Image (tube, rainbow over all chains, first blue to last red; front, side):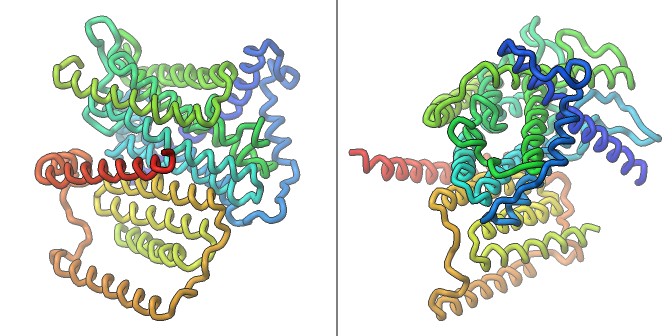
Length: 350
Length: 167
């Protein structure tokens, strides 16, 4: 009993610590990366390469005055940032992050490197929690008593509904070819090779699905080119205009936490999770687990860089373009992918 | 253990069902509904219906209530009519009908549940996606296809109504 609790607790602490440590690193990567892309220097004064800049920023945010404007709905105004953090921290428990070949801690089996191994609905849990991510944006926009915040909230709702459809349909193909909702089995189904030469990653047979999923995930995380809810040129700062100090920091953190989860989902669903291309993980036991964890981390890191890269390369879409893209391009493409997977499975292509 | 979790979920559900109706602030009502749907999902999860629990959250909290909120924000409704401001006899009849339906559900549940002394059905992986999918596409195939037809009809109707102003 207690050994079981310890195993789950260790997994939880590791996942939480890694996620919370990645946030300041990503803030640094984002700022230095944007500087690189725009041919500037970026923050380089505090610490080597400016690496301590996020620490200083956190101290600044913590010690700043927490303004609460007049006319806000106090309860919802305070609930929104807390809700944002809670949701973005609770999605990772259904995502497997390393290979388990029957390892054990204190005589208790590890049961897969995933916090909730017995959650047989797996990916549905992630989508259920992720579909709630729009509520804090709403709450913030509505309770702030500011029309810019309000517009941000309205835009966020319309955007979330439109792109959630495309995202869900594009994942159906992956679940069909894996034959399971559990992400561990989705990863296991992507070992080996396909058509003799390509790695058996879902991105190759289901290229359309991968593209639609990635675009939809950008929209769901409110990142450029889909950051209409906080478009600073039109809406000041959108839904978090009226937040200062740690309230603002909470929204800022939750954006990066969402990016971590989104990158992990892209990796697990379409890029083979912790599988190496062409070769199997060569070691058994803990060495194999650590190596597979490293492979997973490298892939996730690449997609997080991809988020930064896209943000500083593409301009923001106009609102009607956003809606047209979501309904007229993304959903049909995802449906085509879904049909193709059905045909491919019936004919035995994969 | 299961009983306590169930009692907590049920208590939360009842409290937030009342909060979804009584307060005058529409945002409070909608968020009470969110909590209500969550506690119902918890009850499903206790019964081993993981799939239903997830679908409950995805469909109701994730999609339908977002639409509610969208409308509230679009029309900028700050306050709704106070509870009990309608006609008195409507409130009386409404309470009676609601109480009657509640009593009926209790009686039916009492008739249907076997005498086990437990709320759990005790059937392994009945709640996973596979048996539900199989049932939908075999036993209940006609109903399933009929619902899709109904949905298509309503979508066509909505498009027609939306387009009518353009002509």
